[in-house]
Length: 214
Image (cartoon, rainbow, N blue to C red; front, side, top):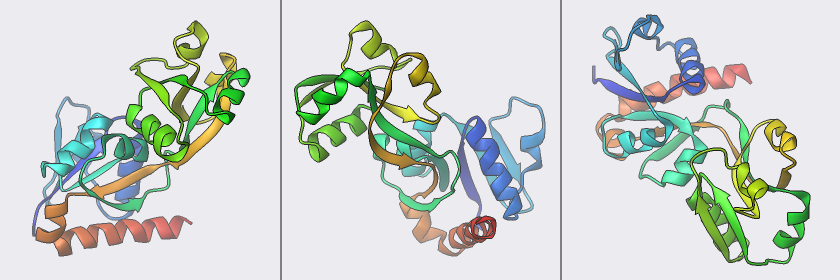
């Protein structure tokens, strides 16, 4: 049996993913143990799992260090790595939005030159330049982007919104929705050719479990 290597996004996404995989027939007892291991083996099913930071998962998949990866669609869009997106796993749902104070709404309506702060400069650039045809100055931030409009660094932000609680607490609101987001399964392009039956069987089992849950 060909071995599969699966890259998982650290944190809640990995927990949700393994819960789904286990229900689909693919478990890994080692991942339930308390340890500092980086790679976890399921020798019976010839699958190994490893945990990585979200932005790195598409890189591992593109370069073949992982056959399969599970990561948020925000990261797939931002990183723009070469991989097949094969399944929407249905959890980790949220939205990518343009947010800011209510007074910034007119700036978006009239296509004025504005400053946009975001952890996702590529998504922001694509949205404003290619979809809205609005010229903007994009500022890359790594931390709490909500600070941007509050301290005058930017007019608006582009960020992930789940409940909107953090926005409201800081006097901001959703001004425009760019797209819906969720956890996705991606596959290395060469692996799909070289391990076709194995990967399709894996995808099929997970899809069957997703269909059962609907």
